[in-house]
Image (tube, rainbow, N blue to C red):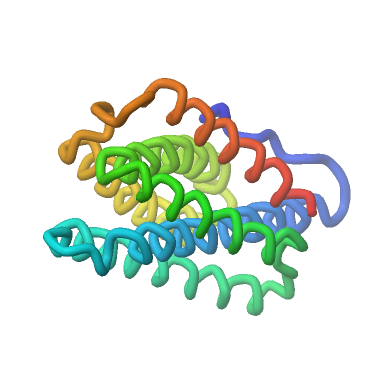
Length: 187
């Protein structure tokens, strides 16, 4: 994803159509994030000696749940439907979270780092695009982006880049995130 703002489309209703895309994709992203953390917690949460990471994952999931609740409200307030991919994103998010957790704590952190890197770039582009026409939403997205950056930084501090096969794992996760963004905007 580029952090360049998307130029406004011409025509009547174009701004509201673009807002719908933004809300739909951001809702999908936060939904996916909640389920990634749920998958990670399902594997690591009950494991003996993993209380610290279980607490970290629960805290990050809590942040994502707040973001998701806000996008639920924004979708309703703006009469925007969620992506038709919602059921798949729930399953895919949980599977990604559980799968990386099964590879170990470092892989779970690598997943967080990869996802949050893409999401930060995605939010940055949206913020730049919305600052002039939707400043309140841009400010909210800035707050959410800062929390996503904190998650990424925490994952890096916990050794995300030390995960087995990190370059490949992170590249695959980032590519999947970028594809999910494109799909969720439109569907």
